Image 1 (cartoon, rainbow, N blue to C red):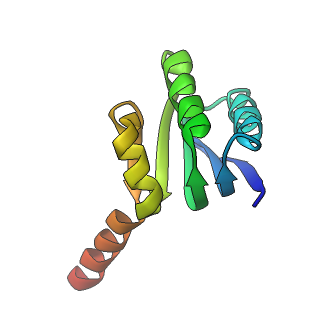
Image 2 (image 1 turned 90 degrees about the vertical axis):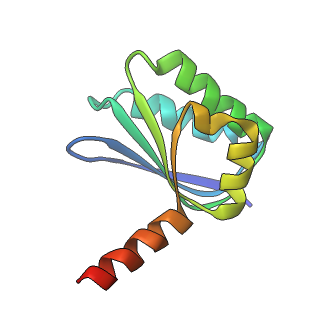
Length: 117
């Protein structure tokens, strides 16, 4: 599967909506999208991983590299990561450096909000 990334600028952050697989043949697309996101005058970059199917070591390496190289100026976070991708990210240790929010956490929060309404 290919990789598609849509970039949106919001008031307090830049959103990268990722769809597909991040692997050796598509990692350059993510790299270009992150580079483009750094040209927008926002210091928080959110990667929406709702439609991210998979990520390999090249993709994880790029995320870690970007976090290390850009941490002085930018704050990265991963949003709505599937359980399968989240497990891989946790095993790789990347979640020690980049904040991650999972689909399971979002579902639990929505359930709690619905019960209290």
